Length: 449
Image (cartoon, rainbow, N blue to C red):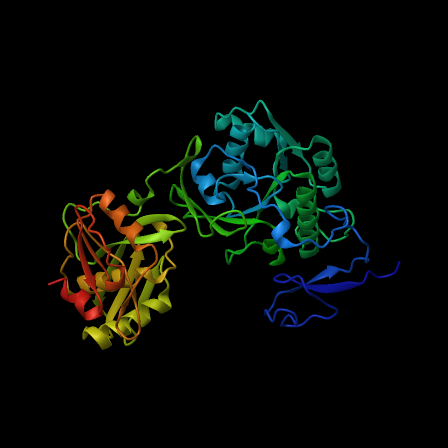
């Protein structure tokens, strides 16, 4: 028997080489080439529509795509208003975080008005039924199909033509056109491509559940995220009951939207006021605590930033961040020393964003610095005060986006004072809110006295 020819495929970009290399020659990623069986070159794709014609863009009628509400407001917010006809959604997250639970709840609601199909590749029909019973869901109109072969799934989708179909998960599905094992780079890319073409041609909204690697990225080639219309990630600590769904890509809505859920015995429950999760309840103001307003998509969220500054016991002081970027903390401490005259080179500095939320925007800079100064001087900030602002290397306080919305959210939750960048000063006063605009880091620190 002739030996099968093998090639090496990149897990990041899907590129192929004949020999193993330490670095992928296509995307320059290191240690990403894995051995797979070479496939025969066979055309497996048919066009989505008839042969296209050149059209003038101005003559094409633009219309909003019809949406299917999922019945879960937080999920609809992240999706941009609901599922889109013919759209493909990729939902990734750690094992056991609640992906299948959330989708089963959504299908239970949508089955009242639309035809839905749940394709289970990881669990048997009995296991899915047991979960639905435990969650007390009405699944009278939910169709279930336990199968992992792509061709059979395609035949069922073409026959039943459901409005919404869930594939749980894409890493378990395999195609007979390929000889590699399920979950390999070639199989994941092939199955996702075929299902995406089916969704576009039939109008079925398909939701793909994806595994994540230990680094937190979706398993399989990076091209998987480029194929789909929407990429959602489940976030949250497994030891906490709170879960967050974030949109990293959305062709039909805003990116970086955040939906907040609470895990209970009856499944995932929406959290209507997520700001309450990220605020600690102290009897009195404590040193090292500062409240900021971060912007997650179109939603302003109040988050408590805590800092602990302690005398270093080693020649190299520690800089540790939870929920914030560690390299940015080192930069901010240098700015604090240079432009405000407050040194921390002999102090250990620990910074935490309460509630497990991850803050990536620079609008948290000023809140981090004031929390550090508060802990260093053992002096709490004023009660009912929020702080927003980006800090530049020259010591200036730079404006943040949607400053007016952040202030209104804070005022709605009862906050009375706000230290904000001078450029974000509102033209009209906000009722019940004392605005303190600052232009330099030295001016912000002076407000603490």
